[in-house]
Image (cartoon, rainbow, N blue to C red; front, side, top):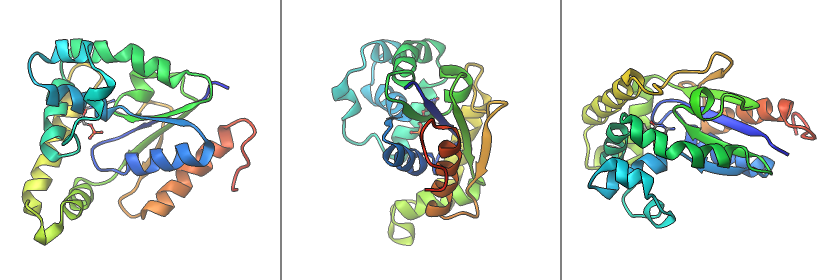
Length: 205
Ligand code: DC
């Protein structure tokens, strides 16, 4: 079975939680494509060379989940040669036998426009920044909320404004706004959508 679930959206909208849950529920492979760009940004040196030589070990490097690594990823992701170097790997993963969930910014638009399910997961910048801030420890954490909000907005601007594969919903994507949903509700909606399209899956199970 070839079956691709493309999950795109801005930072901290809930893509990761939804993607992992959908993959586990339906037994699909999962690729967090943001990790590829984070690894390229963290490697240092020439980003194009880093992208062309990316290895499994690079993806397991420490510190790839920090806000700083996210900003570095967003910067290298605007370089067309970096994106081009990562396309084949993502396409092969998306169309591999057994089915796959990929989350990122351009999965439904560029990497796999033929995906059987396309979701665009979003939420207001304030809600997303608040989630990130709480993950970082909230009041007791190292970053004041306004600073986290400014970073989220800066990353949105860069990811949506770049010329090559900008962040936007595919025309046939289902938009899921998680601003007023908790994680369980968001996951349930995504699973219902996949179940309705996956051969052999029982809807509403
Ligand atoms: O999903 P994330 O926060 O880990 O992504 C980090 C950055 O990588 C994001 O700001 C933009 C870039 N990215 C991208 O351009 N295309 C993707 N498919 C995934 C991530």
